[in-house]
Amino acid sequence: QLELLCQGISNISQISGQTIFNALGVSQGGLLLRGYVEHCMGTIDISGLRLYPRINNLLTWVSPHGGVYYPLGGNIWYQQYWQNHFAPAGYWRDPYNYQDYVKYSQYLSQFNNERLTSQSQHYRHSLQQLQTWVMVWSERDDVLMPPQSGRMSTYVIDWPRNDLVVDNHYYDDF
Image 1: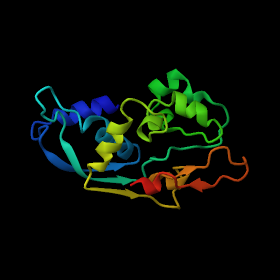
Image 2: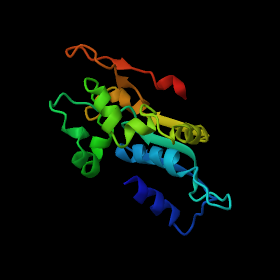
Image 3: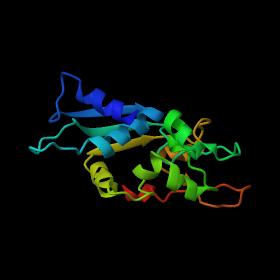
Image 4: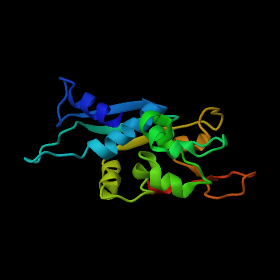
């Protein structure tokens, strides 16, 4: 989905790689726009021209930046089939199988820099190029679990199963 979004934005005839625009993403769309910022936005061609338009201000509305977790049992979400064919598997963040998340998540673990790659510094730098990033979330959200994922918070890793709490370790990075 991310590659399709990047190509789709670059193919809009009214904008070019040198254009700056503002963006609003709702739920998974906000996570995709964040991926656009981190993965596509800083890409330049051989002559040094930006290939993709730059987002100046990003507003995300209840987007799962910290991932989602529901105690559904099983660990199928990290299997390659689900990672390739079911978008929410890319931001499934199981606090009781954190190592599997880091190793097999093909989306969120990279953009949250929990799995370090050759692109990790690029992702961080690209986010810092935003003039403004507003994350709107609600503690009354019944879809995102935890609701604070909308502000990049996550469940604490390996916390006792009956007492999940929220960890804000990403929150202070921005």
